[in-house]
Image (cartoon, rainbow, N blue to C red; front, side, top):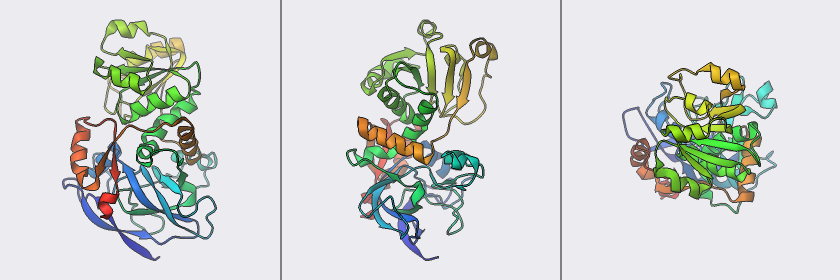
Length: 352
């Protein structure tokens, strides 16, 4: 298969900084869309992959799965996109397309495993896929998304991961007008959970360990802030929430949040991978038909639904735009939670 070499930024090992690399992109196939990448959001998963924190990184690793750009070429069988369209690519670029999950538009739960935008098995070139820290990307039409032209394309980028990760559970648990939604943690995911839940008509409350984020939370649309370390405040919302979106990315005690659920309420974990410590106490769950669940990203149709909703309601992420050459510093700042609330790379800095 013919390929084209393009500039990219990636990691050659777990212990070396990201640097400029050259990677190969396939030439456009009949069902492919080629996108000139304008902006790429920076996700915690990018950092974890570059540093091999999860133990399965393949090098060279080129992260980036919050991609927005302009279509520069389309295959002969492409029907949904034309050259010049504003388009996006999220966390997945392929799946089996035939299993029960895929047929139900749940490609993120593909029973044979979806192909991640980076670090997945490249079905076309062999090896592994390379992400959006690059000049361009070529993706099968089915996995390309339309971006509303009225939105700031840089601020759209984080919607492709942080946005859909919170939108999917909000929709699955039927959040709408009258719903009482809690959000645990005010970071990249948490700030999008507040915006999207509020956009859906819910009453939204941020759980925060300290009062320092109260003003920010309310500016983002939160109706209330509960300080989770304040026993009296937590007791005041006992049995209150229909859904709680828990975005905290490290091990923490979920039991206090279960106590704030209404009958049949659900805490949804979207930020943490691993065992809970301490363990869940089942008595409050049994006595109130309460649940602790978890959720991944959304499928392609659901992600398009979210983008269309954001276009209608003018919802985008709060971002800080950086140059590609500043990515290593950005990673260090992410580790310190020193960003409000998502870094986005201006890819013109790589192409210069």
